[in-house]
Image 1 (cartoon, one colour):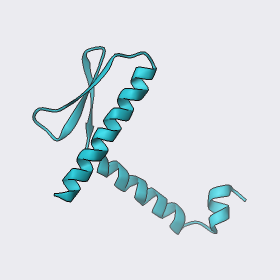
Image 2 (image 1 turned 45 degrees about the vertical axis):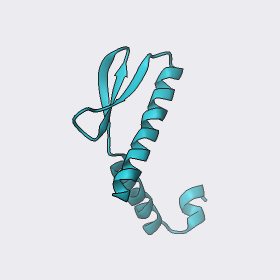
Image 3 (image 1 turned 135 degrees about the vertical axis):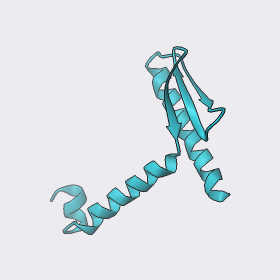
Image 4 (image 1 turned 90 degrees about the horizontal axis):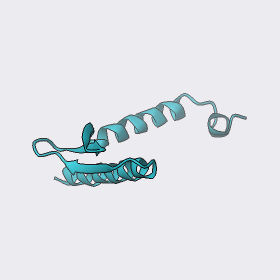
Length: 83
């Protein structure tokens, strides 16, 4: 239950950010919850162009990537600051 609430919060946050970016580029954008699935539908100029699904999967991939970078790095400074 808590995981579902976190997914909803992050999905809505990504939806709002998507709408903000597209609106700043002068696109008429609307983000609407999907009526049949746990996702958000993205409309640009009244056309359905994309859907936003479970943001937690993207977070998992990001965490995994950072873990690999840290695991195979020589030192912290050398990994992140290219010394």
